[in-house]
Structures are given as C-alpha cells and as structure tokens.
Image 1: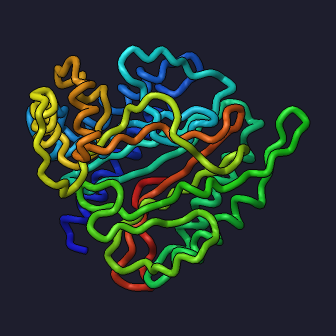
Image 2 (image 1 turned 90 degrees about the vertical axis):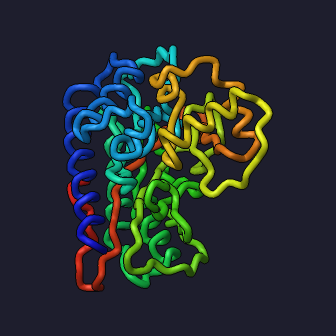
Image 3 (image 1 turned 90 degrees about the horizontal axis):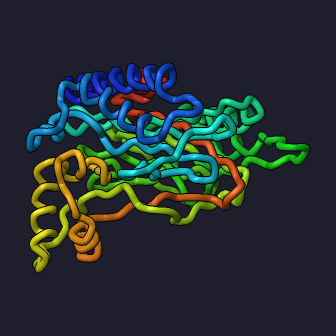
Length: 328
C-alpha cells in the first residue's frame, strides 16, 4: 500500500467521522425530514472535501462515495429520498445511516444505526458487536466462511423484547460485506463478498485488499427483497458499447460518465445538476445494461433491522493491525 493510498483513505475517514458526528448531533432527530438529513450529510461531505460537485467532473475528484442511505425499520439498505419525499423521522423508528466519502476514488464506506427508544438497544448492540467480530476476524488468508460463522454466532446470541414478545435477532443472510475498488463501491476487478452467516465459501482475504465489513440484523425473516421506489443507480463498469436510440438516454449517459463515472448516484444528484424529465432516459440506460438500478432492500413489514459498517484495509504484514482509521 503506497503512501498516497493511505493518505487518501485517512482523509476520507476523517471527513466521514466529522460529518457523522455533525449528523448525529444536529441533523438526526425525531421530526426531521429524510430529505433534510440526507442533504445535510451530503453538503457536509462536499464542503469538507472542498468539492461541491456542480462543475463537470468535480465530483470525481472528491466528495460523496455513494448516496446517503436512510433506511427505516424493515428497510435495510439502498433507500434515499427522491425529490418531493416528505417522510419524517419518528421517535419509534430505527434508522440505518449509510454514506460514503471518497478522495480520488478511495471510498470510505461506513454506516451506523440510530434508535431513540432504548427498547431497541439489544438489536443495535447485537449488530454492532457482530461487525466488531468481523473486523477482529479479518486478516490475510482468513476464509470468508470462518468470518461469516463468527459474525452469525455473535449476532444471533441476542434477542429483542417488544411488547412482551421476544424476537430472535437474525443475521440477514442475503446481505454481506464486500471488497472496495477505486471508484467501485462493490469490488473492483476481483470483487469478493464477506458473508454474515456460516457457509461454504473457502475464498481467502489477501494482502492489499480493502473491505467494507458490514453486518445487518433483523427481527423479521432475516432475508431482504426489492421494495419501494428506486433512488440509487450506478454505471456498469466496462459495459459493452450499446447503441442508444433515445437522445435523452445518450445525453444522460454522457453526463453520468463525466460527473460520476462508476461511483453510485441518486436521482437527487441529477436534479442538483439541473436535469429534468430524465426518468425515461434513465430507465432506458438500465434496460440497455449500461446502468444498474439498486432498489431498496427490505425485510417483512413490521420488523426492525440494524446495520453497522466500517472499512478495513488488509495490512502488509500479518502482525499489523487492521486499519479502520477514524471510522469508530
């Protein structure tokens, strides 16, 4: 790992830490709208990186690594408010806050969960401890299956009591951690997944890799499905050349390339750049295989989910400590 790589990661981690503290203290309160919370986090990141992202290509230098996810209760991931969203955070909500900061494409991907009612403390503790277990287990030549088994054992030793009923906390089996590549939140060339349940994956972690160690717990089925309106999108890396007949799709694809590259973006980011009536073109890019859509991922309604996540850099020597920098 060269010095530039480490310097960029340290800068991104410090900005993430400062914005996270600001969000927890000033933004995330019952009665706040999800739009205000998301925009407050994103503007904070842009100000601290010094790149507001309004000029062509500026967002690729530094800024948001991916859109702010504000996932409430049974929704576990990939929910960000679109224009006109009027959802207000309630005192009884459990909200996962997941956002990324990048410097030169080096993405710090870190998430936490907020609950105002202490009844949810066991759920948050279970998932936080499971993530910490994953971080402790990670290292050179460690098998993914061993990490997943340790995470699941930690998380599922907890239960949550709500209104006189005990709910076992289940690891969400179809969500997982992942490698991070430069400008690619999921993986890079040899992308790997870090399971959060036991299984047969004998793949090993290797020196020089960057991982998002994240775990998700649920009082529901422990399985998520696509639900609700999509906000998150990302250009497909190395997508084949496809003839686009819609001029709106061609123009939008050019804008995505110049402003986001392979970094994920959301509809609000297009609004911010002055784009209007772009949904037809955007859907055409998705159906053409040039852009991926990432709809919200939700467990059953009525359940509660939690998430904690940090970045780990697999070090150059086995004796070195996994680096999480400022993400705690």
